[in-house]
Length: 146
Image 1 (tube, rainbow, N blue to C red):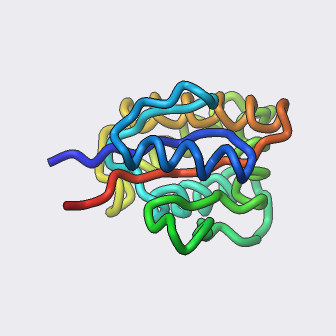
Image 2: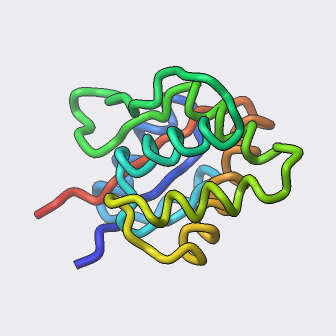
């Protein structure tokens, strides 16, 4: 069974309201967002590690953080992870995104095709650019397991 995830750009208060709506089965249209299938916080951390290596960005905190104790299935992407993804999105090497996608697809945790990983990565990077432009944070909500 596929698990639904949603990556979205928001401020803290709206993120909580957005997660509440998603938890309740609603489809909120209040934030720039990207629906994903089976993308976990760990998948994003691994993406960050690979992107850091490819764009030679250094090291920093890549671990997604809980937002609120009442929201078990909502995490915020750390600023360093957002910065490295923004660097990847604007990197001068046109092959960098494809290289990251190939390596991410080959990771044990993601286990998908390079084409699928590239499609997801391209969408994630577009959302990162929107969040940066609008000075918003990025949040990942994952469908609660029943």
